[in-house]
Amino acid sequence: MARIPEDKIDEVRLSANIVHYISQFINLKKAGRNYKGLCPFHTEKTPSFVVSPEKQIYHCFGCGKGGNIFSFIMEYEKLSFFEAVQKAADFAGIVLPKEKYEPEKQNYFQKLYRLNEIACSHFEKNLFKSKNKHWLKYFLERGLSEDTIHDFRLGYAEDRLNTLTSLLKREGEDVAEAAKLGLIQRRDNRDEYFDKFRHRVIFPFHNIQGKIVGFGGRKLREEQQPKYLNSPESPVYYKGKTLYGLHKAIPAIRSKGYVILVEGYFDLLRLYENGFRNVAASSGT
Ligand SMILES: [Zn+2]
Image 1 (tube, rainbow, N blue to C red):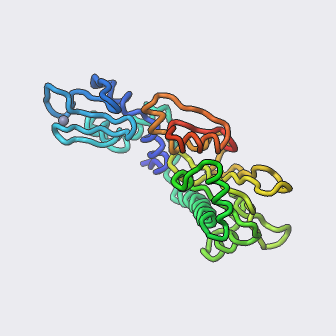
Image 2: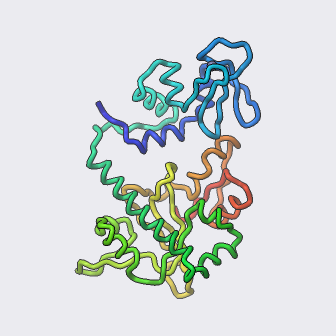
Image 3: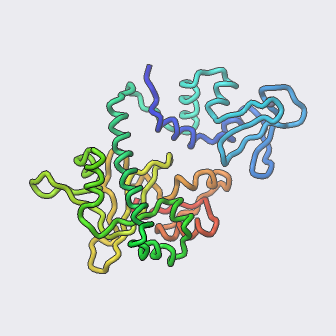
């Protein structure tokens, strides 16, 4: 049997609107932030079945049944988990991969995510080193709080040639793959690498599952080129397919029913700072 990759399952769960799905079978009425209706799993006269568009879950306060869109389909339509994922994917308009589950390919993707994750936490830690406090101030002076900085995992790449490269080597990671991700660069004709992002503030790009797929690095000195250095396309990162900040915005977009689209990272981060959650930015990604 074909297996559906975990990433794809997450994508389906996040994309299929549970309120719309359940509304096909049950009359749901808006009640504050949630929707309410008569529970399909036990007999009742007053609605105690609640669906949350923000959390994408349902719960019955009468019989205790609850879960996500997959458990609803399994329970209500008496289908297997595999069939439920396929059904929800059809509903969300997501095409599930037809090919057989290939552990090697999955491992390859995991490796790329891990390399990006190592780089992301490296840049994050740099930003909070006391010798780099000037660059933390760079964000604070632009109106961002430390909470927002943490939420978006903003960072700093130090003005050195060989910090991320040696970290990756120490961890026994595949430096050739890290170079393909644009994290480090190979010296001409030599088996040597150096850090690609240097002396830049770092904006990590997340996919909707919250995994790191790439980075945008803004220059901090006038003579640096380019102004924004962005990760190249890779098997985990397609330009034009990712909106900056979308991974944080999905629940709010769902409950508000619309998205505020802005251009730059800071446009988005400032709105987020001021309590707007249904925002995404087109910049860099
Ligand atoms: Zn019930």
